[in-house]
Length: 213
Image 1: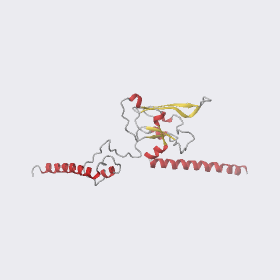
Image 2: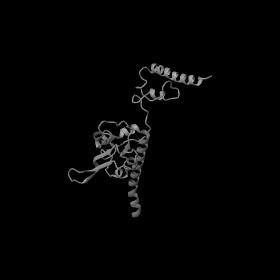
Image 3: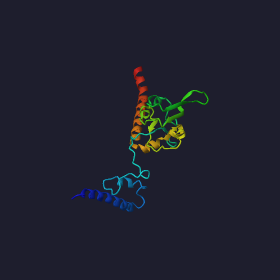
Image 4: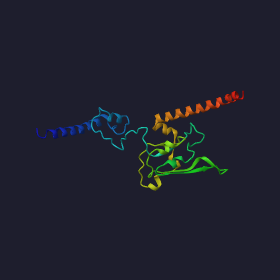
């Protein structure tokens, strides 16, 4: 019959409209605020609208999602490195950065004036950064990670889009929160390497004694 397809299409649209309001009654004010509701709304048995109602709702980020870099620092209650900040200001990240948006100034000892393995200043121009992740990939100390925070809009790019050392520094617990699997693998690799170094150090005196004999 002429117009039957249009009628079926309109019925689907009306049904989704009605189901949306019925779903609102089901969740009663928690539809866009309760994190537990979001997986069900994105599941195969949901009713009503499927659109993510940003910013009330946000899609969960995968662990390997890359946005702006940040520097890893120790948690105050669980230090794992001899320095508070993992970065040693070696400059590899600045060298491999394709758009050259990283600037580092090495720190100096307050008494001797000699360089120390710690940055005094660290800047990243977020407007230039292409979020490639090379800095995190080439860092020999795992001191740079890629953040999941993509909400960086501001009205003053000169003040807010040049991230300094204070803004870039985030504790290792933050990295473990946004990427638990990757962080666990990295921790296991560091512990295994430390165990191998300890075993080699322990076996060195015995080998020297055997050589002496």
